Image 1 (tube, rainbow, N blue to C red):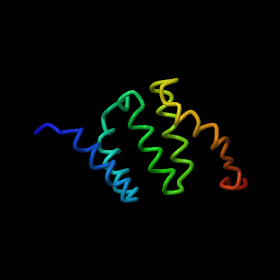
Image 2 (image 1 turned 90 degrees about the vertical axis):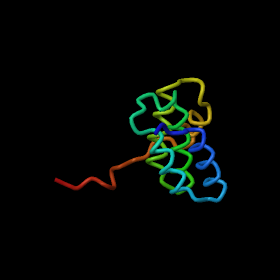
Image 3 (image 1 turned 30 degrees about the horizontal axis):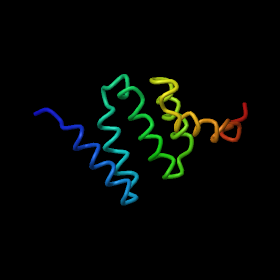
Length: 97
C-alpha cells in the first residue's frame, strides 16, 4: 500500500501544535527514510525544528545543515538557524590520552 505523505505531513504538523515534538520527529524521520534528497531539504528543516524544540541543538544543527546542503538558498530558516547556533565545541567530550 502506498503511503500518503500529505497525511503524514498534516499529522506531524498537528503533533507540533500539540508540542509533541518527539512524535512529530518520528513521523518526519519515517518520511525521510530512504529519501536521499530529503525532499530538497524540506524534511531536514522540519526534523531540525523538532530537535531545536526539544533542546537538542547538536542534532538541530546537523539537520539544518542537511536542509541547506540539499537546497541552498531556499531554506533561509535553516540558514539563519545555523548562523544563530554557530560553533558547538566538543572539547569537553574528549578523553585525555
